[in-house]
Length: 65
Image (tube, rainbow, N blue to C red; front, side, top):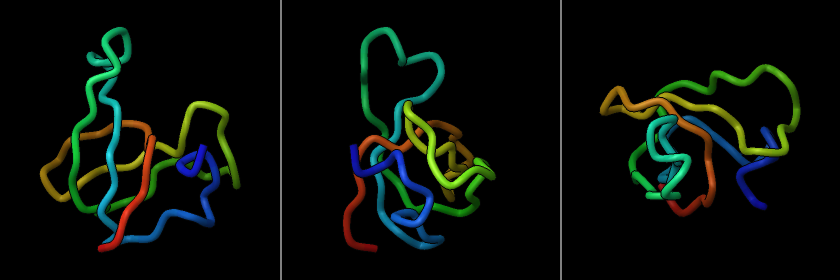
């Protein structure tokens, strides 16, 4: 899972995240990373980030910024 390592996530990177309320459905929200909220180097469910839109969720996939 590419979004589970903090070293893969950078501010300004385009990512797809799962919002807390969408965890059951798995619906993805895309956007640009504004802040990285997870402090540890990895997390099994994905690194938690805040997007420029203000949405907060765990990274599932990463892409080019």
